[in-house]
Length: 121
Image 1: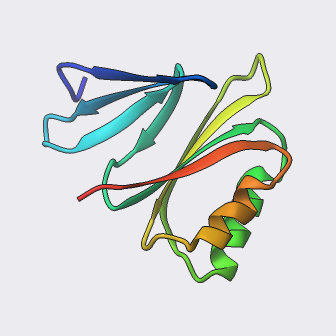
Image 2: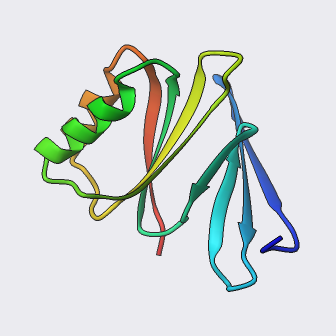
């Protein structure tokens, strides 16, 4: 394929755990390619929003509309889903970080378990 190895990171706390796997392509591009076993494709750079959500209609549209109303541009979006369950994961590369109230609004959606921001250099 376009890479020769994969790195997996597991984060665990009192409320649960999550696992992400990444590669560096032969072209030198880092990519997140698995999240809790679900296939995704995201760049770990700039502002990255990670969302753990139920696989139901309207979640991605809600996130996009909420960010759009806040004038936050999505530069890339990737989602993975398990067709045998209601699990989904969404990764969004953003041009800028949303304010706390915008993130809180996204977190309040009934189908979103959590949404977190990461800032990469």
